[in-house]
Image (cartoon, rainbow, N blue to C red):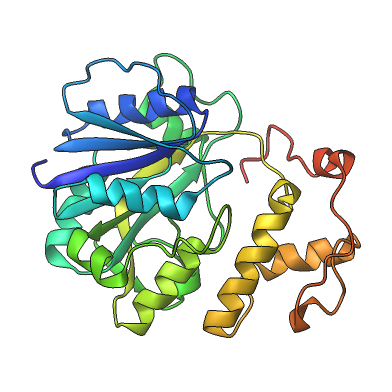
Length: 283
């Protein structure tokens, strides 16, 4: 897998990271893997047969845009595969995206299968993860080959490939999106404006490891409001509108938030806890 680098971000999810790397080791090895640690000193990693470079960002919160850009700057290959730390790649994921990038210039997403709690244990098999995982109901992927997605809003950064030259042409992720939310949708909208398509590729998959999540994600309340406002100012429409509606329904922001969100109060710890998804729900 010469000329292909895998980039992932980590903030305290060392167990997830270990499974991601285990998945990479089971397939054709990338030329390198770059792990961007967001504010935490890294623990030693085993030798898995391919170079792993770790970068530590001195940062609070989740500087996702800045961390992904740091990973790209550390890469020396033309083909880049961004993989979230909670995703285990299928054995053919990196070679599939790498091959796709030789044939097409775009933001190329693969299918994600969401796993329930307890689905990943020592001795896991790809067949077992595929059987346990659920696909996302909104996104449809081809069985093989690539298909253009006409809705740039369906781009996701969990697992995607992009040429380094294309990433640089876009200026990478906008680091003005600080923390959680909308930085990936902004990248896709800016790509679409330049004629760079969002493409869905069939066959290869990533398996999303279960972790605590909230619906709506009240734990990211401030980030979502700030980033949604930035996105709307640039693109003229509101992202994450379902979450913003849910915030308004809870009396956290005004009901007329589309005219500009007004914070009425912050969510309480009890409210955040009440939105946590049960273990059997993968998303």
